[in-house]
Length: 373
Image (cartoon, rainbow, N blue to C red; front, side):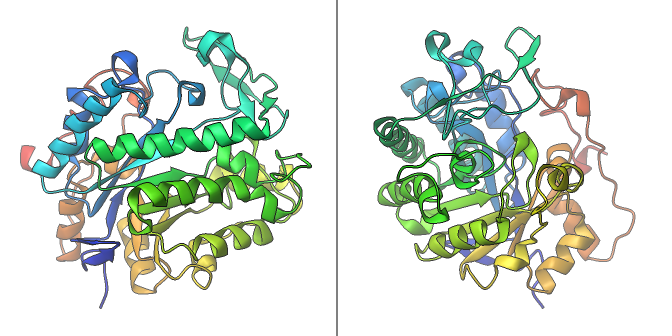
């Protein structure tokens, strides 16, 4: 019977278990938005999972929307990520870099020269953004990218993939979820364009698909994944026909021979805010896309051991990505292994929420292992 500890063929790799470290922004990059030794320690601690996916990693200085998030475009950042990949590989793990551009989820305070953030269209995100100085401000109205600028952003993603290759990663994942730039093109709640990148879903999906094709040219399709959030309402996202929009996107991605598709399932906040933004809102589980994508399907969404085990056994997904639970328990696979062996006294560290974003070792690399007890 297939379970979380059944090995999985993932592109050219055989990973030893189906436990994935979900990408989680931690806001702990060093000078020049480069990773450093503390980041290497953090990822190496969690190398027991079958696959690690890094925190979102901007491919250009114009893709920044949060303080101290790592980039993947400069020599300094490449060297920093090499510290991380070397540490993970020494610990026996595999790691993919998640490539990112926040689009409209930014502010001139984060942009080179105080420029206006960009998006598919001049549609502002609702709510407030936290600025580098700790104050908050309304999200500004972004500037719609021109066709030539779109080509430039696609080239930025390719360059990020090339840097990731030189930095020793095992593959890359496109962050196409959570209301960031590819999502801002895909969903018509933001995309109001009337050119080749707007209007019907075939045009709105074009930006993401063109990026993915560039990534596959660098890495080969079997070492590229894509993350989507079809039920996500985060960052003010909605769509008039989510089933059709994401059905088309996943069908087209399925033609490319990718390593995996990573589907985020609906969270409590999505179920709360999604219907208010669009009467068409629909919570689409990962299993909805099984028939459209024949490759490895990873899902994520506050899974417990019990729910994850059921999803794998019932064939709803091939692997499960864990966020907060893995953040707080760096030896999560070992804890799950004990549960699988019938132990019911396995303790789990509670997450230290105030330390999630920014800071040093506290709440980052100081969570105890079972062996510390």
